[in-house]
Image (cartoon, rainbow, N blue to C red; front, top):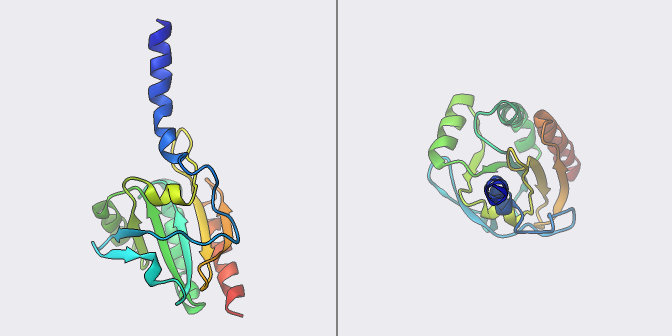
Length: 174
């Protein structure tokens, strides 16, 4: 019975290992890592193609169409014009499929890039930790030099991510 109990606990905790590969989360001052993923339209997105051109707002969210994630995505949508006028590109990333992202973007009229990270490789590059229920919810602002100038983590404060990122991006362009 004791072996069965430990096996059960191991199986429950196994998914957490997916999110713990990078022990040190990225922080302000770190360089954004290079990565290539596929967007909601099936296009390849290589971060190196965008460094040096505009500020990047990269936000990681747990799941398409969940309650807090939808509020967060809609907050980025509602602030999209201000963010782009301030010179930023908005990018959402999670482990969802390209098809899931496409449906989510169409349903919520999201005008920005959603990237599919099915193996959580980019999530791990950024050192984002998960918990029993989901991956982390974190937002990064990267300047035109490719350096992280802002990092924000708040799992249940979806709308605050867009508001915080906008304030940082607006300061970058002043």
